[in-house]
Image (cartoon, rainbow, N blue to C red):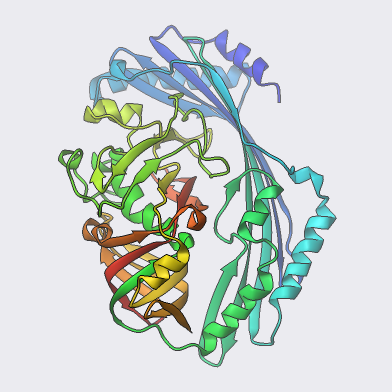
Length: 478
C-alpha cells in the first residue's frame, strides 16, 4: 500500500481552510476456529480508507471514502466543505478553539513472536489439540477454540505538516467448554476467551494458552454438580477477569465526557456523573486509584497518539478515591471547558473520533492473593464474566460470573455455580476493602465495546489486580 502516494495526491487538492487533517486506516485480520473438532471456515479481511476533517472559523466538518484516488479525494473534500458551511450556523461550540496536533511521531506494537512464524497448518493443529483437551467427558456437549489476529496501520497528516504513523498488532486467543447434565448447563472459558492483547504469539503464554484447556473443561464439569451460589450480603473477591468488566461499566462509561455532556442520551444513555463532581467527589475508598494509561505494553489500547493526533500520557482519573478528571478528548474539553486526556478514538476510517476509555486501569495495592483470601470471614470469589446489565445512567448494575468459590474463615472452600452480584456504581467502589499487589495484577481487555451513532465497536484495555469489596448483595440462580 503506497500511503505516501495517497497523501501526495490529497495534498495537491487540499482546500484552503484554517485546518485540515487526513487519517488513513488500513486493516488486516485473520480468524481461525475449530469447533467440536471441525475446522470452521477461516476468515481473512482487508480494508482501507481515509477520513477527512476540516476546520474553518467556527465550522467543523468531516467526510470519508474508501476510494483513495484523485476522484475519491475530490468527492470527500466537496462533501466536507458543504457540511462546513452548515456547521458554522448550527455548531455546538467554536471549532477554532480545538487544540491541534503539536508534534509528529510514530508507534509500533512490540512483537516478539510474529503471527507468520507459525504456519497455518501448525495453528490449526494446535486448535485441534485444544479441542481434544476440552472434550474429556460425554457431558461436554460443546467445545471450541479460536486464534485470531488483526493488524491496523494508521496515518495522520495535517495542514500544519504534522505526520503521525502508528501500527498495532492484536492477538485474540481462547477456548470454551459447555457441560450439560439433564436440565443443568454450565460454561467455562479460558485461554483469554473474550479478551485480547497487543503483540504477537508471545502473548498466548500470559493467558495460559493452551495449557489451561483441560482444566477449563474440568471446571465446567464441576460447575454442573456444584451447589448454587448462596444469596446473602457478603464479601466479594473479584479476579482481574471480572474486574475488567466492573471497571469498564461502572467507571469507564460513566466518565466519558461526551456521555456526561449528553451525546449518548438517545442510544446508550447518560451518566450519573456530572461536571460539578470533578475535583472533590468521593468515587470510592482511598484504595481506589484509576489511571488512563496508554503506555502499558501489550494492553489493547496502548498508543502514543490518539486519532486526533493528541500526544498521550498516563494520568490519574481517580486518586485515593477522589474523582479528578473525565475521559474527555480535545474536542470535548473545549465543549466542557475541562481538562481531559488523549482518548479521541475511531473504530475505522469510516467513523469520526469520539471519547473512548482506551486503557483504563486500577493501580495495584499491597495485598498478596493469599492475604486477600485470609482477610475474608464469609464471602465468594468470582471469576470470568457471564452476564451483565446496567441502567442507562451507568449506575445500578447486576453482573453474573462463570465460576465461584466460597470463602470461609479466611480459606477457599467449595465451588458454587451461577454466582451473581448487584450494586450501585456511586456506592459500590466506596466498599473497596483490599487491593491486590503487582503479583495479582493482570492485563485484560475487550475487543467489542460499542458506542455512538452510527455505531462504533472498538477495543478497550483494562488491567487490574484482584480486589475485595464488602457488604455486597450476592445471589445465585440462572
